Length: 211
Picture 1 (cartoon, rainbow, N blue to C red):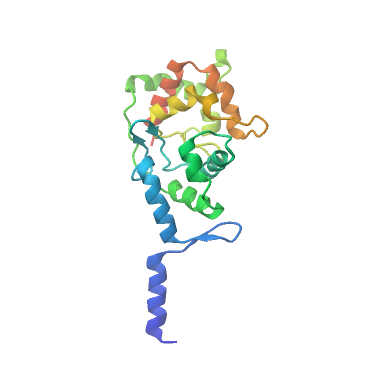
Picture 2: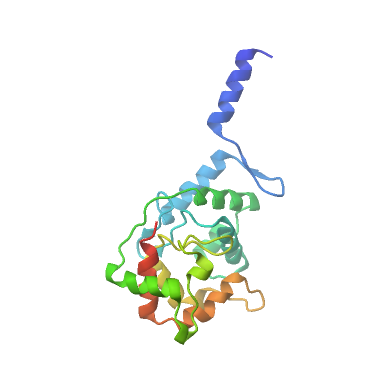
C-alpha cells in the first residue's frame, strides 16, 4: 500500500476520533456522540454545567458515569418520573448511554453559583456531621468528603442549589415510583423526609459552591 495513503488514513483516524465501545460490542461514532451531546446542551448547558430557565436543569459535568447510566435506566423503566427525560432516555442504546456518561464525567466547568452564601457554613456542618437528633447521617458518608460521589453515588459538588432543593423536597413525586424495583437511591428517601426545608437549603448552598 502507498505510504502516503497509510499516513493519511492514520491522520484521519486521529482527527475523527475513536468510537466508544460498550460491553456488548456496539459502538458510538464521534459524530453520533457529538450530535447527542449538542442536543443535551439545550437543557443542561454548554459544558454540562446546568442551566436556570423556567426550571433548574441539573449539572451533568463531572457526574459519576454509573450514576448517570442508572438514572437513565430509571427514566426508561419509569421508576423515576420525568416526561422529557423518558422521551430522551428510552431511545438511547446501551452504547450511547455509556458514551454520554463518560463524556460528561470528563467535563469540569466552574459551578454556576447563585446560592445564598450565608447558608453554606450550616450546610457544611450538616454535610460533614449529619444531624444525630433527626437520624440523618453525614452526606459525606456516601457522596465523599469532596462531594464528588463514587460509582452509583452522585456528585453533588457544583450542582445547582435550586435543583437540589426541588429534588429533595419533591422526592416522593419523582423517585421510587415502583416500590418493588428499588435502586440504591432509595436510601435517600427517609433522609429527604427527615431534613427540614431550611436544612435542605443550607446543604444545597454548601455543595453548590464546591468545585
